[in-house]
Length: 451
Image 1 (tube, rainbow, N blue to C red):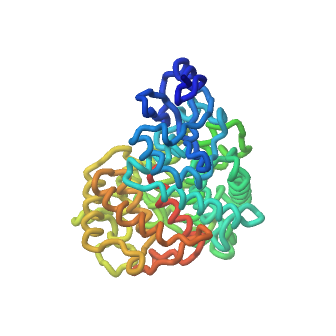
Image 2 (spheres, rainbow, N blue to C red; image 1 turned 90 degrees about the vertical axis):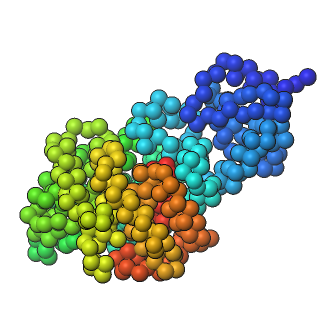
Image 3 (spheres, rainbow, N blue to C red; image 1 turned 45 degrees about the horizontal axis):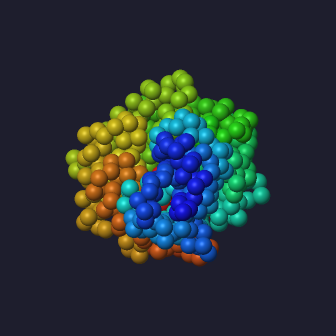
């Protein structure tokens, strides 16, 4: 009598018994076990499509699965059918993925992304929403490879973060060309500007340099280029100039750090003013750029000292209440708005939980309990993005409570074309009026589970 698994599949299990991180042990109605990765669903045949370590693929009838496996397949049905599959069998080797920093590894297959979402208290619909957003980004890319209408350095950096956060490299079957064009745009932008600044608003000395926007653009784009450099090691294509571009960008950030450990704008030669004071809102984006610089493993002069100064700066902004920033609620820079980015920065750069970060997380948690996030009342996506990073890195009930409150609202705001409708902020600087910026922040929030 033929085995429900299929003779060939069962034989392969005997030859390849070692399970991979993305593998699942499946059980059929006869109690037989097999280790395989879920890669798709054949709705017409009511079967799941799986892949063994050997690369062999086959289908298992839903009716032949045990009840827990049926439930697993049901939970992942919609997401697997709609999410873009960017890995080609054998394209990214297990060894290559394992060579990445741990925080990067779960973004490369639908199975590992969905498992990360499950562990973090999310639902498969979040993966479907990200897929729809990425498809819209692909079609909305400007002819020169950028995204957005203004501040294209920042907008391109944000969108690339969304692609790279989903494991979409230059070798992605669906999005590789868009990623490549975006990176080439940033590399060329840096080449044209002094100190490798990623800004499309460069005006030179006579116009006061780049103004404040250029400093924000540079940090946001540096993070994207750094992630591209890290993830490039899993593929076979090399992008000329990527490493030099990133190293130049991060060295500029290091050299422009102020004596207080922050960053400031207003410089005449380039956007930065290293003789300036401190700006926690600006610094929050730079903490993420420094974090990816650490993840690259590159030997960058001054990086360790810069990180330590940044950590000290974060601690210097902590209030008696545990938040980070000003203590006047109506002020532009206040602890209710900036604590997410600062607490996340401390957790990233310290690479461990710290008393300062713990107090910051508690402040955020208490604040969100007193004023629950509401798309129609206080939709401050800038703040929510920071809270998401900080609370996820912290973990525990603080994260799951936030995720169960905010993620459904983000999902509910997505429109049929993959974009997100505008919420109602109660802090002007927390608004995301620009459609590209809003879509990027929403997508990054949904990707928090695995990026």
